[in-house]
Length: 295
Image (cartoon, rainbow, N blue to C red):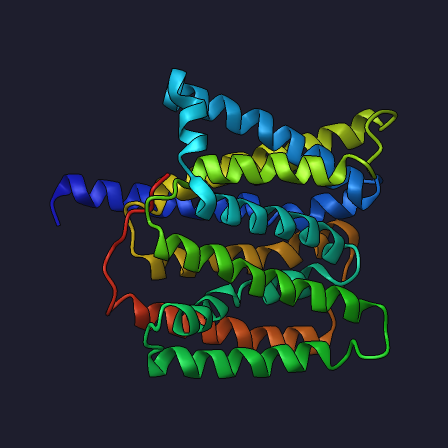
């Protein structure tokens, strides 16, 4: 590896790590905002739309609308799934622990592998199957303490987020020409539209508006830009491994700030899931090559 390539490699690692750090604040922000779920979804997405439009204007200039139209129907499917996941994410965070939501979502690569096997007839390596089995075992441990309580609804939503996320992953694999940035911008617009009939558009406190701006611009927009930029220079498996920072740090922030204790079952099951993900990612780095996503 040349000095220039090594510099890009290190820069990519740092960008993905910072993106994961920003993403890890999502649970804490939801805990700190007093607004209802639909209002949070509306304003988070609205601030994200404003930021992403600015990014697209800088990158595409007069071709911004053309870049959006070029995502096509596969891109619309990706955007729709992202929009639904955005909605479910906020609702799940208010119905179960931050740790449960983030750990459940971290299993998304395995559901994507399963869907790719069904739709694209891709082979699922033994290492992936073993990691999936371990992850399912960890999830069973996590939710075993939720049966009979209201948090089971949030747990199911969180698992649904991970499963639904597999659809855009496989769609992008099938249609690699889809550009992520315009697709995510469209997803944010869709989330605004879906939330607008139920959200409190006016009358929110200045503090809540500030937190929702951070949620939309920093945790959503800037993190996405950093991740898509950094992921171009490092292996996909390494991006996933660094991305586990979000899963680890997210519960720490809410524990330190609001004293949210995820519980023994979540910690035990989460350790099983995170260990499976880490081992899988480390092993996968030796057998996969770097792939630059289209942004």
